[in-house]
Length: 121
Image (tube, rainbow, N blue to C red; front, side, top):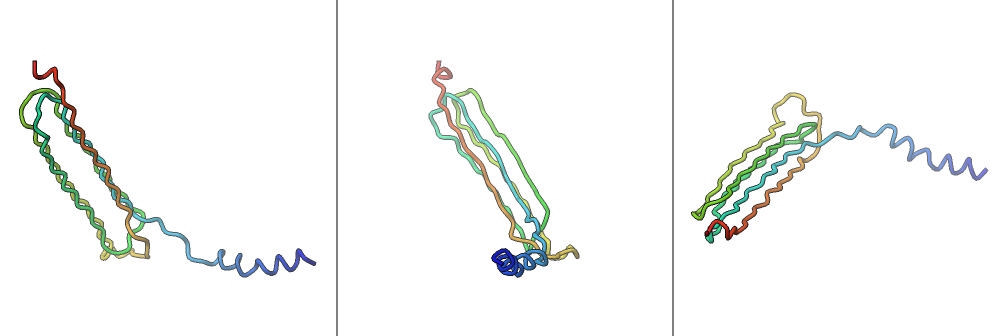
């Protein structure tokens, strides 16, 4: 008898799961880069890393990834590194906008400066 009550009690939960809308994958935008300088310069490296990730509307099932490495090894002079990244998802006018979620945006952009005394010799 307890098993019947438990089964009947779970029926609304099970039926709700069975007939709920399917889960839609979101979109992902990612930018991964490294900017490094290993030199005898005592002047800090001048860096620009201009990243613009945009997503309009409910996005579903897309991914965009940019990567970059900028490096300098040696020397004693001033170092300047610059990058510009633009990514845009526009799902408002694609004709297949059946819903979706917000876009997951990931930025991983370490900068590294290492003073190398051997460059001063």
